[in-house]
Length: 549
Image (cartoon, rainbow, N blue to C red):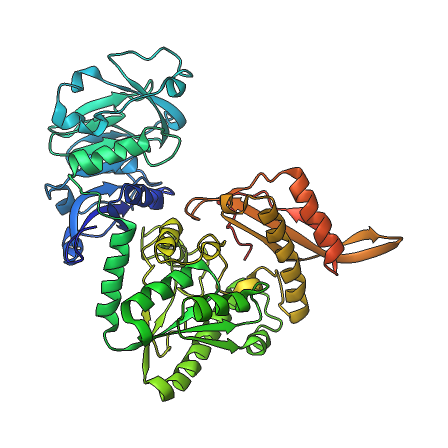
């Protein structure tokens, strides 16, 4: 990352693809800052941000046809800016059409899934247009499954396709770089750095995809790989200082890595102007309160106030079943508790103007429809994004708002956060309240807390905790018949949810060994009163979310 005044950036315009966030992450993995913006964002709006040195644009894919009545378009000024543009799938078709080319409707001919693109040899002599594929090499393992041997003069790449319409007439100055068996125009480019790819380089199913993205960043956009952990820390600290000034900040700790890293960044920026508050809602994991006190008060020596508000929260949650209402209630109570603590602290240290939270980029995306594509829909409210009351007395400081989970963990390690915190699985702000399906009370919380502890304990004993994205128990509203000893039981069903994920935008269910699942189920049924059946959730995200509520 460059000096905070001018940060090199690649802007990803989101046309509604399920892979838009993944494009942003792939760029950042190459140590270049990338930001995801709505498709309708104009060049003038982007240039209003004096801190961004825009080096190029990526137009994402999307579900629309360029001929749809409400098909999203790109600001013409972006395509006429002289800056490099990479159009992917719909983005390629849109770019071609807006620049004077033509897109053919599908009419039954579509490409979905694995495909093979063949690089056309006649383009290799045109270095300026060919930069996107320059230096791309293919291993025998990636090509041995193809239907014909790889030619020395016509390299072939395994890729991932997902499109119906196709470009059939190129804009002036463009050349075809690659084709497939059913699509003669699979990649196009001109000498000015405008590139269109009908396939998806951002997904792992395109093995050379990251190299292709690197070529766009470094050979075409001439980016400098400056988006590093150290530079992120330095810039974020400076931004916090400029935002907060001499004011005081109160930071809510949840027991997770996100709020912990946010607190460490803010403490590095403003020192004793920060007071951390841990609110015990009664919906926390076992040992959460003790671990927070040990780490932040005793180890990090950061001012910490612990508030036992469990009865207050549980009273508000009586007979509440709807998960969105649970989130809103908990979000509102958090703010009210913080406001009361701020008033107490103000009598000792002065007025507290800011509330700090560990909001992440995926939280923002899942909670709002206006941060990215116009077609995006709210999946659920995150209590630290959409669940906040409108009339709260604080201004917000959210230093992680534009970061993904893996980036936050890297920051945590660099800031000397203990390893068990850095790699701790995410825990939702509303806590166990949204892992109890139905009404929440103290007895059900104790039951779930005991079951959840067993899940984590067995996974840690198996040595696979860090390989997993998230693991937890869910207390369902279902009761089932069982037999224990010589008697009939009618008790609760617990679901175990364990997933693997890189970015938490998508996730797959973890293929845990049967013996591990058996130990988890056996211990829960034998050690936790009121449970006689354990089931395992084998649903990916999408279509499900990671949490049940």
